[in-house]
Length: 375
Image (cartoon, rainbow, N blue to C red; front, side, top):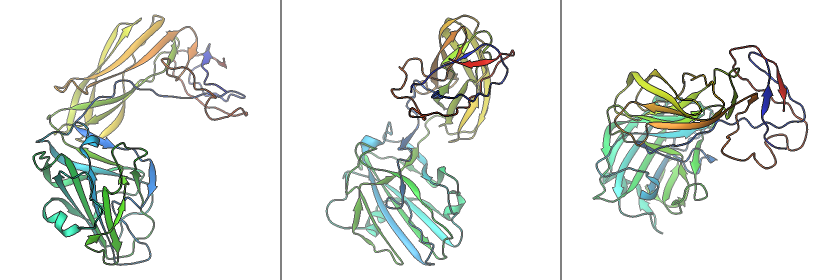
């Protein structure tokens, strides 16, 4: 089965149940840019082996100590003098950090790319590092499945004169039994080039040893934030239909994924959207976004009238031009709706049904009534 399009003649909001057809619904993006944070992985594995903390729901007293090395190769465009203001861990949904517990985090620049073949002293590593966080983890880590920002008590300045790799140490201690499982997403050498064993050393127990004897290649899925500009919007993904019938397909449901990577909250920050190609159009809109917040927002539809291919852009009006624009390509045509990326061939074998019968539900917007049929 292949990804197909939907041919539409008339209707309003179209909810379709389609038999013996596989439809891939894809939002697509082009032009993801460099920005003032780096995200290393998006959650390839789930478990406890990579930390950053190990909890126990059968013991009141428990500790974990982790020491990670993040090699320069995975740190994106982090540069000497950048000020790190937070990091984020991604957890799976589950129990909360209820009860009496605490978490401490340290950062350091180092030259070595792994911890070597012998155990290291956790105390020695934190003595030469800067403590950036000390709090109850529940203050900033909730129970839902997502990234959670850990704001630093004091910023950390990336100092490449000490080394271009980053060492991260995390100490967790609980004094009450945690009611449920708390697990985090993590990455390994199969998902992040540059990771290997023994870049991570750790110890766990009722009293975790200072000597970190256990090793692994696995690191938590993580973000480091280092804003440089006061106002800086990272336009991460632009979503449009792949094909839209004109004029009956208007308005398109255009959306954009943006992140505030600047130092300040954004209030009534002006954004632009415009198209180039068969339709030359332009509009603007305003956003409110807290610093380090990521959000999908609606973009005004440009109501194409001419048939042909358009590139639909979303642009932020800020100084950092390396990350403030994204685009998506869309074909205005006679009678076909499609979410499929028209710059790529249909996926071999289709998506979802694998040759068997199935149902598919999709929604399309229209400014006039029409009736859909499968193509």
